[in-house]
Length: 294
Ligand SMILES: NC(=O)c1ccc[n+]([C@@H]2O[C@H](COP(=O)([O-])OP(=O)(O)OC[C@H]3O[C@@H](n4cnc5c(N)ncnc54)[C@H](OP(=O)(O)O)[C@@H]3O)[C@@H](O)[C@H]2O)c1
Image (tube, rainbow, N blue to C red; front, side, top):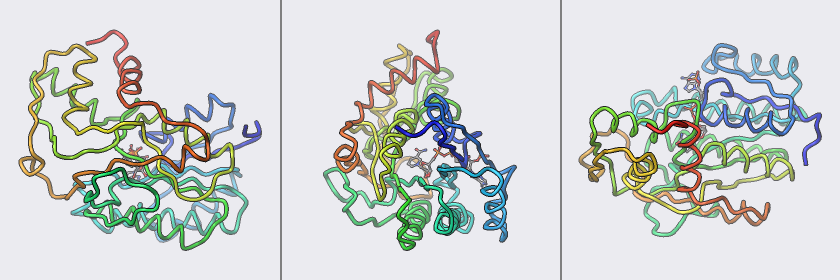
């Protein structure tokens, strides 16, 4: 177990989907937690190294969790420089700071680093080949950190997040269903739906044992977007028709992998924990988000 004096700094902890989950779980476990957001640090500034250095001097964290990212996959096609600034330059800067200080760094990446040509779950040994500007910038962020050969750094790839505190796919679908009673949802992309709170808890398991290197963390099982939407609708007993459509019939600038299920074996081997199945995690999320039903 982590010492009670452990002090976390969560980038993206005020408003980010994962950042907020990390803050909740860290606080539950008795950590002292600080957060930084875009109002505290300008991540696009040329002075970002110095600004973060000042914050690290002030807050003196033992662990830094980077849950900031340019996550708008569509917009990243139009604003690749901004995606690179947040998804490559920021982790690279944090890595350089970690090299000269004593904090441990936990960084998050994505299943979208893969091209989706595999038919079996992607392991940490599989070679990324991103299809989108977002995926490329996230992969470059991973590589920038790996090039530093830090011995106090963990990179965690995750996928298809849902959870409290911020808009996400599940919440959007429920909103559409409430309003229109029907939703067209892509069925030919398959991935690993993941509950942000489970991801945060499993991240802490890695931190507690001082794990280093690259890991995949996602809830168990797989689904296409249409199945995820149908399961959410069915759990809430909503009257809504989910109409499965092909990805090519959904207007999109970014190319997404057709298959990006994550194999979490390396996480399970080191922690002896197997993440629970995504439908079970989804039910817990829906009970939290919609306690009175709909
Ligand atoms: N969401 C998913 O389905 C998913 C899937 C795979 C991997 N991941 C990875 O998981 C990690 C966490 O993702 P998330 O879903 O929690 O992301 P999120 O909810 O979109 O939060 C991203 C964080 O980055 C900040 N941010 C985004 N754009 C910014 C900008 N232009 N300027 C300044 N700050 C900006 C946000 O700040 P504000 O709150 O101020 O906007 C927020 O704190 C990321 O590394 C992501 O790549 C996510």
